[in-house]
Length: 475
Image 1 (cartoon, helix red, strand yellow):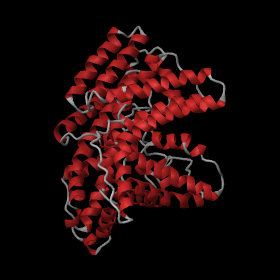
Image 2 (image 1 turned 120 degrees about the vertical axis):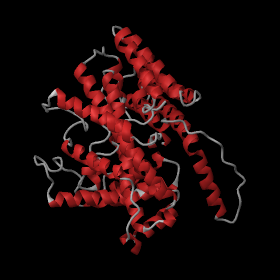
Image 3 (image 1 turned 30 degrees about the vertical axis):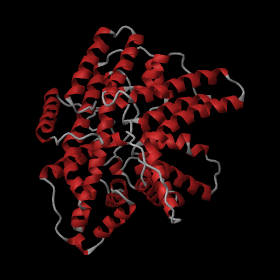
């Protein structure tokens, strides 16, 4: 089930009525309702997906209980590896089996030999990369004695499968989200209204910007060999906004939907295009994934020397790339980002105390240049995120850095440029707020507010592009 369909609108309307008007006095029944709704939501794609999420949830629930009763370190490690092995084993088979098989066959061919192996017709379960990391955080935190295991199996299963953020994040920690299932939730109009504003902003980003950009971007990447450098460069720029609005649009809808139900999810994007260097960018982009790898992988890698620090940076970014997909292009994408990140660590330029243009409306000339440079780095490296092979990526870049870069590009419709400009203007003005339509600290008359909301609704209806799946569903 997809957020931007009538199916979800009907599903959520029925759920919302049952949740707040029928079962609002009983938190246990509310959690059972969340669990049932989440499994219906996930099983809407393919009921077989439910088997995998059930296995992951059951294994980690039982491992968590056993870890609390076990004092011997060797047994605790065995239990932890049961959880890690089960979750990563399922993820590895469904997402990476064919990749490793193809890579093995290619390596075998280097020795002028042939390997008689056939790839399997494996369907990648939607959202498996997200809920796998989410449930793993639970057992790892129990093993590290940061949290205690829950005895409430319904709450735990609901935590793993919570439908607003199940298929594309944000990736939540058990320490933050699980306790929210155990507290009585009381409907708060201001919180729910703010959640709906965030949902509206997410729908605008996805349907008006991302889906319209997709038409132009798809042509650019599928037929890049016949296009000139200027068109390919413009394709890259528009692809960045498509990618950002598609993914952050989902995140806005997820967080906003959860807020209407009394839950607070983690911020996953913090206006990354207003970053002054690559380091700041990665503190603002897909925050829940980067922080997960930092806390559960990077901090377990021993060594504090400069060489080991640089090694760890490569590991983090290559893992980030590999998490995104079973293709050498994603690994190379992560490798290139590590190369752009390491000089900032060497020169100790990894942190900024204030948001860009602090206490000012306009950025300085230097800040504008730094933002533009960071965006261009992300765009150029992003070729390898979208292209089919690494070789195709170099060919694509080769066409950009040719004399044809100075030709007149093939342009998308005017609505694409208008949408991007509007996005940048709104998010620049709101860069210190939780989301683009947050009214925190603002006093605006109801007439102006509702006129603005209605205008956005009409823009979505009139200019929303053809419905496309969210890009991150494939990860």
